[in-house]
Amino acid sequence: MVQNWNDKNGNFNTASAMDFLPREQLKFIQSQRLSAMVQHAYNNVSLYRNRMDAKGVKPSDIKSIDDVSKLPFTEKSDLRDTYPYGLFAVPSSEVVRLHASSGTTGKPIVVGYTEDDMEVWKTSVMRCLLMSGINRGDFVQVCYGYGLFTGGLGAHGGAENLGCTVIPASTGNTERQLMIMRDFGTTAICCTPSYFIHLIEEAPKYGIDMKSLPLRHGVFGAEPWSEQMRNYVQKNTNVVANDIYGLSEITGPGVGCECSEQNGLHILEDNYYPEIVDPDTGEVLPDGEEGELVLTTLAKRAMPILRYRTHDITSIITMPCKCGRTLRRIRRIGRRSDDMFIIRGVNVFPSQIEVALMRVEECTPNYRIILERQKELDTATVEVEVGEEHYTDSVSELDALRKKIRTSIMNIVGIKIEVKIVEPNKIPRSQGKAKRVIDNRKI
Ligand code: DLL
Image (cartoon, rainbow, N blue to C red; front, side, top):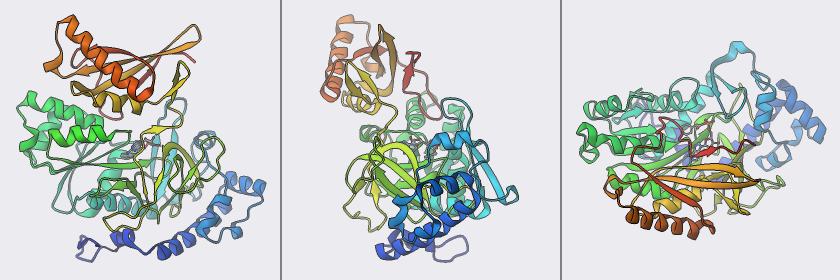
């Protein structure tokens, strides 16, 4: 099953073979890497040393990957509190790259990479691209943001490592993106799913028929998207739309990706070890149960991360994948433990709203949820654009459509939520991560 593929120097690519290792062999590698990484983190990062001492755990207690659960958790606040370099485990002379993630409030978090870390990152993204069917010979247009965000340079490094022809388009200027796509013969694209939807919408305005382009692969991530959204993309283009996951704290893109089966994301477990925990108690849950994804880096030197609480909700798929990879898979991340809101006592996630909207044929994937607070009670209004051909001046027709959308939301969420149909192109488009929830509650 290992893909017959040679690297830039003509050598058989052993990196991809990692995807297919027998589980015992993988476990051996994970165990070795974990114990070395923990010793390194303990010796060089006071936060980890203090936390492990407080828990009574010594580096020598970590002999096997099964011991990972003995380690303390790390939270985003730990990165903020030690801003900018407090979790770095090597001197600055060994750090060859910095990235940062802005987050919603306050200071950004800063992450660093040694030369070896850069190799691991590039190889991880390369394996992800291979997994989704991209190979040398492909023209890969990278329209994630370049700069401090890990998306652009992360995808770029992986595609270049694979030997693809990389087009570093970065974000912005949709007309230019489409022109490049057509004129340069782009065959694969890496961007956020919401930005790709925008490209699909805009293409006809510039006389471009997406289906007549050579574009065949899309590797979309950095934000949640639904199976319904995938269907929309695959229906309107010839692109096989795959999901890629990652986060700055762990590496950037390349922690996991979908293969041709499009049924869960393989986690590159030799580099990033996944656990699922109960978001409230932190207790480790068995494979198959839904909970919060916790990740431990196994091969990072500049900034090793022990048991990072991602707040991303998913579960580990227990069934082996038909593609033959032995790396375990997680279900696509539809929600975060912290993006829930409560309307009339019912927990609502933005991802549920997306699924409900996409079940209504007339709706486009352009929507947002406005949260307000009235007399201590939260209210939500879903604003959605319908296709131009469905947008009408007829109040009664719009009203009927609005009712249809409300019913679809009611069927999934269990309560009625206010729906407003807005004119086409009214909802601001994002070139990076879409902002789905506008929180006006001032809490
Ligand atoms: O978004 C890294 C990335 C770039 C991943 C390009 C994939 C492609 P951050 O800005 O640190 O890093 O945001 C990380 O984004 O914890 C998830 O909540 C969310 N996220 C990332 N990928 C996905 C995905 C990059 N495929 C945070 N599905 C993560 C759902 C995703 N959510």
